[in-house]
Amino acid sequence: MRILVTGATGSLGQELCPMLEQEGWLFWATNSKIFDITNT
Image (tube, rainbow, N blue to C red; front, side, top):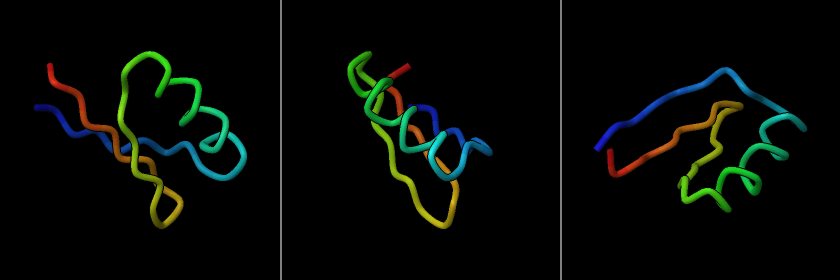
């Protein structure tokens, strides 16, 4: 499992989350950060 923290924030993060969820990514958006967990 890999955990990444990106700098995408605000509306950008809100757009990325649903878009990437369709590609099988899981996200938590907290404190203006996006944490994504993959099975790779």
